[in-house]
Image (cartoon, rainbow, N blue to C red; front, side, top):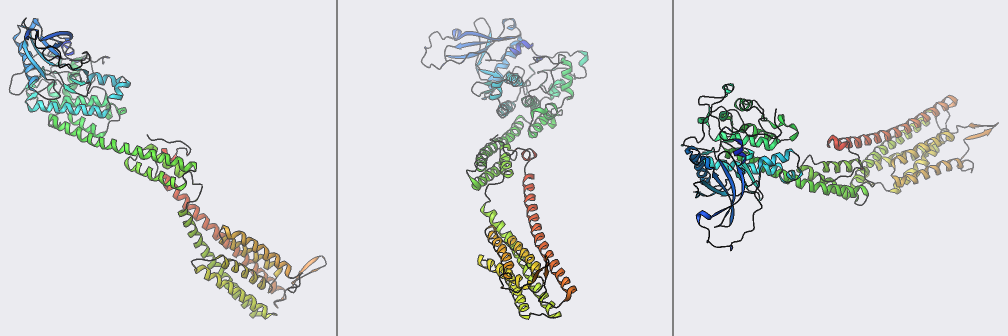
Length: 639
């Protein structure tokens, strides 16, 4: 069971003393600098420090906010309480703490200004007065969801603070000092970005005696105790070997473990070892490594990057040999991540700028102001944004909007491509129709020479015209550019050819049929500008055909008699069966030709539609599912 406000257990001094050493948490705002105020009068040693406020009191000492009359600055004065003044061990530990901390001159270690004895025999030392809050309080505020803390202390900033702690601890290790009590409560964050490692009271100096006193563990903890049974530090942060009382085995990697526990708490806002009212339970958890130090398992909602998770896991390994070999190595691992994180932050910032430009361009394109140029800008800016950050939601949304809403005008490059495809289709049809008309000319010739024609001149004229237009279309199929005049001439000549050829069979039905077929074929092969002319010419050719006989220009091929029309076959001597057979063949060939022309156009249209749909589908598959599902009209903005 974890209490609402976790308690730091300490086997060296009462908890009240530990809480009393958070220097400066309640200190007033620093006064303005006044270098000209007063002289040295009244600043004798016994009157140098003027008491202003009690900052905290513990079992062995207290900390006061004092005014240094000589310098004119506020200092924190720590005094050994009179009750312990005659205690040689307490006095020795007090002096040792002052000297160890005073000799560790590092920007992240609170400097000691003075060490002395007051008139009443009270031993004291003065330190820089810190103003700010502890890392413990920051984490507590973040866990509570305080908006100001969240805005001030993002993960990147907290990792920078942690990196500073690592360097301070590495400096102490280089001077032969182990802290042994690293925890968030012993890290002070100043109001102006300063970072300090506090409380060197139980620090171990290489080559000297242990300043702590042994205690006997209860029988229930014998599994966690070892030969000498001494445990120093704070539960929840001490290394496993420290929790087992193996103080002779402690080295830099023991402080690395504590730093790893702090890192875990920074990343998850939860302690590595869950708080418990039973200190024995926590000792067993630390000594045996019973908890996972993977943030992804303990706090999956915090979305901790895997690089940081691996750093945390290694720093808090049960075996010291598996941890980072030094605090500096841990610092460098975090710095490597921060360097990449800074690069990632810069890439995301640049990506957001390009995404904003893409969203603006997409808005212009879809409103009709920018046209294709705006679409081009939108896709290019979105491409740049996605190259920097493939997950940029605003860029993906801009791409989705542009792809899902077709342009109001077909761009020139697309129109040119379509024209080229259309020209290729037209050439194919011209070749087909040209060879068909050559074949028709040969068929007419063979038929007439087989049974004989009553009008050889008409046969020669029909065959000649048919061959002419067939060859003409074959040449048109090979030409790079076909002029409008060539198209219109081809249409007129083809109409005349079918009218002449129709005179050899049953012109009343055959000729209109083929005039209709060839009009449809020309319309399919024409662009939008030519189609109107072709339709007009086709209608005119059919009307002219029906006027030729009534006007006496051509001899009649039908007679209106007894309420009906009798068809005449003046050109061929085929008999009734032969005439009907020829008529059937011509009709079938006309119907098949019309069907082939229409079918070829439908196949080409289907192929073009399939290519367009396939292209659209492939472009959509480039987008994540959420972007494909986004409504086209949704407004977008940079994330």
